[in-house]
Length: 204
Length: 379
Image (cartoon, rainbow over all chains, first blue to last red; front, side, top):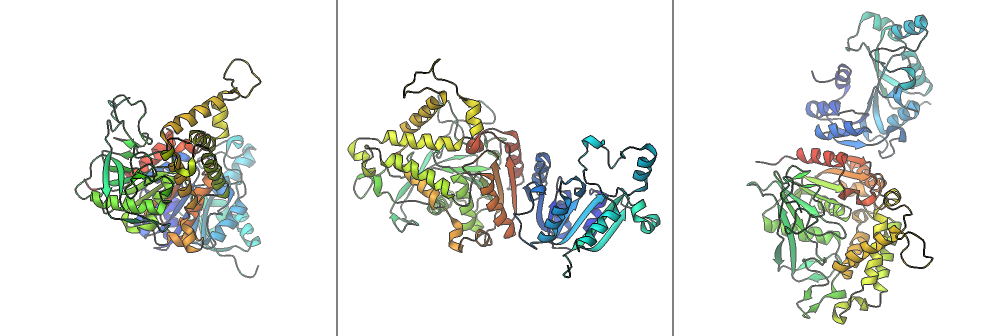
């Protein structure tokens, strides 16, 4: 797994072999490529960037060029075992709508995002009085793709309000290591948050 | 011409294959015997697993790459994609490019002599469809020793053939390359074809399709048909960029002659096309487009049709193509993903409308090349 981004390794552990997967904002297709070769997974990547699409073609990954914001209308209800979206939630105009679409199309959904509740972000804002800029969030406020940042608490509250069932959670640092501090205070010490959501609960 | 260019297949020679075995057509009629003209580029390898079938669209023919003579100014219709080092790399692939049955440039068609009457077929030439073309192409493959195509590729009506191949002979191709195409024509598209046919059939020189016997050619009708088609193949922007409201002469004449450059251009396109293309073939090709609808056999359910395909698919569309818009390609993609088939789809930025699949464009050619390079063939 050495070639995979640390956070993708965690996701690979969650995916059951032989599943059908849709990877939204799949970049160069590395995750699907790995899953195809090691977990007998089938599926498609969705990506809008032309260079990334070309990389997917080169990597022999099924790629469908499309804009996530336009919805997943080309995919039928519950037609995938997993719909995955890594590090893209915060860059969407309507993350709530995309999450709804993910839950419609997939039996399980996996999302990851940078936790804005991290103590470093809080400290940066409270001491410097300016929007945090870091290795994970390098762009200045006016030029960032990350327009809908959220914290671990925000996301979990959102899921509860929408009756979305969180079946797995991973709170890790950028190297994908967990620690006691992260386990005790995930919203303060977690750098990256990973969630698996199951189909909406029936009682809503 | 530029046969000295290293990425050209150079001077090529069409070949003719005569078929004696009658071909039962979708319309129920039979063609007793027929000729198919085709070109090949590259070399068939020992295992015969590197053959690529290239299917032409409405007005093109078997001449897909290279030149026919030193004096040729223009190469074949898909020369941007076929040649050494190009997307369909002739150093790796053996390319077969036939001229479809019903055409006027060599293969048996309405202009050919009907052996039963010793006269040109004319309107007696039966309607041929995409299904029929795939059937004769299968026979051509057999005679060439190709039991499975590495890929079948085409744009527009050619893309429909690539699609139909995967449905009709699922085990006989590994990849289907469908560019700027559609799973069936829309009402608007059929309407355009109907107008084109009316233009031809209402020409006094048409004589119910028997114009060969009358020594006439419905050239005006064919011209109008082509002019109409040409408008629909270009985008509004492309026409605007190319011509704007530029005048043919320096001032307006306030008469019905050619005032604007775009008029002059369209007339030229119509005339040059009508000078070499057969009107009956044009009618046939538009009908083949109209009738194409593989999903109709499954009650309109395209994904049910795709359940039995085995080929992997590569689909592409172009942003300004309104005759075969990206939405139409997406219908195919959606049905393929529903059927859990392998498919990649790209929508390329282009200003050239439907014609974009014939125009050089780095993103398009790079992606097409990358896809083709991953197709495994033995040495």
